[in-house]
Length: 363
View 1 (cartoon, rainbow, N blue to C red):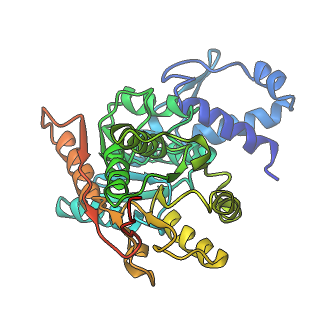
View 2 (cartoon, helix red, strand yellow; view 1 turned 135 degrees about the horizontal axis):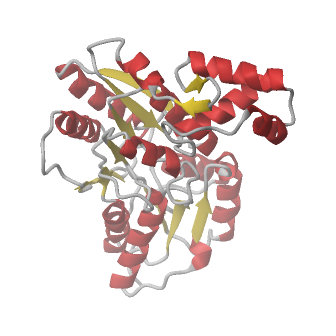
C-alpha cells in the first residue's frame, strides 16, 4: 500500500500534468490540502517538497506554492537526441510488433529515440502512460487510443500536449471528441469486403463477431450492415455476438453458446480480427463444426498468427509496418516545421483468399 504522502504527490502531479493546475497557478494552501486529504501538515509538506525537487512546484516565501514547468526543461535538456513517445494498447501481441517496427525504423533514420508504453486497453494504464510522457517531456507522440468507442476520461492530458505544442497523431483509431490527425485502416471497407465476399459465394445467413469498446469494432459492424443492405439481406440482431476488453476472456465460452444456438441457421461469419477468427476455428473443432464445409469464416488484419496457423485463414490486409512508418514520418515532419501535413489517412484493405470460405449452392 502506498504511503499517504505518495498518494497526495501522485494526485497533485496528475492535476498538474492534466492541466487542472496550470503553469504559474497557485495551488491550494497547505491547510486546504490538509482538509481535502485528511492528513497531517507534515504529510502535505513532504509531498510538496518532493514535487518541488522534481520541478513540478515552486514555493514563494509569504506567498504560497505555484505550479512550475521546470520538470520539462530538466528532462528535455538531458540530451540533444529528441524523443518520440509511443503508446499502444499492446506491445508483443498480434499486429503490434510490426507497427512498432515501422515506427522505430523511421525514427532511426533521423536519429530520434523511442519511449514506449502500453495500456493493455485499460484507461487507468493509459493515464499512467500519458503522465509518464508528459513528465519525461517527449518531443512528439504516437498513440493508439484505449477503448476508443467509449468516453475517455483522459482527454485533458491530450489537451495538455496541445497546449504545450507537442505534436501527436493517432493510429488504428482516434478519439471522436478530439480534432487529431490519424492513420487508420478503412475498417468500414474491411468488413464490407469480407461480407461481400461471403455473399458472392452464395451465403445469405451471415453473422458477425464484433468488439464494441473500440472504434474499429463500431466501423467493422457498420461495413457488415452496409454489405447486407446492398444485397437486400436482412440484418438479424441474434446473428451479432459482441464483446469488449472486459469480456474478452469469456469469448470462447460465449462463442460456444452462440454457435450452438445458430448452428442450423448460420453458414458464414465475419470476425472482428484474425485472433477472433482462429478462436472460432478452435471452438468449431470442439463442437464438431467443419470449416468451411459447415461454416465459412473471414478474419481481418492479415496478422502473423493468421499466416502461421494450421489452417490458412481468409482475411484482409492491414498496413501494420507502413502505418507505423507513416505516423513516425508525420511527427518528424511536424517537428521540422513542414506544413500541409495530412490530417487523416485511410489505408484500403485487400482480400487475401485462404481455406476458410466455401461456395454454397443457391437453392
